[in-house]
Length: 312
Image 1 (cartoon, helix red, strand yellow):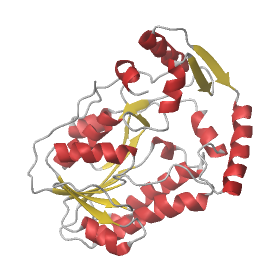
Image 2 (cartoon, rainbow, N blue to C red; image 1 turned 90 degrees about the vertical axis):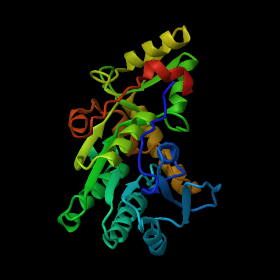
Image 3 (cartoon, rainbow, N blue to C red; image 1 turned 180 degrees about the horizontal axis):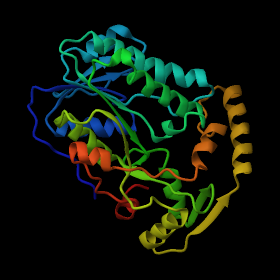
């Protein structure tokens, strides 16, 4: 089983965290507290009290809350964002404008905290989807000359899975039943990263001043995963036959257009959209971890085959 990272840090060091109630953020919050940090975390709803967590009521549009969040912090970790939506405007409002608001608050703090944007590998291809465009625009904003005086870092993790994951888990549960739904070409190269490896990278970032710039992260599995590799891992894990069902891209696109129409009509945020189809059918999502390893010594340690049975 994955082990939570634990690093010795001064107990007086305070870190600001957005997205603390989401999948990645909640796992990171636990890791930060276990590592000895004091955490100021943004929330829109009341949360249980904790001696090492100070909850700040508000969201990325509340300037007073953001000012309170970043005040007195040595590092800011921006995990908040949306992955579902029915228009580009919705994604930009949260993922771009929210980042801009947080940066505006950060610039007013003295001394200026270091800033980490947890982005997405989808930002490689901003034309693929509204989500990818919003993440890429947030990265461009952070790296612009306007914020040159900040110590700025961007992490682009690939698909993250682990405790609390709601996006990859349905795929893995279906795999346990002996069915793997595959998209794109059979030669497609996917990449994954366990949430504990991602949180370890963030903890190491907090411990060093070296990592500035943009870094991509995956689990280091050589060449990524083909769909057949994932099917094989499922067979070995549960000792059963796995049938790979290749879903045609045209069928996915039709389903995505119907789902988007329903989402707009019924007013719920769509996950499956034409843009998401572009992402899941892309041929190669493999990363190169070497730049980040060189900067902070991070190396992923968790592979899917080791933990698949525990994440479904």
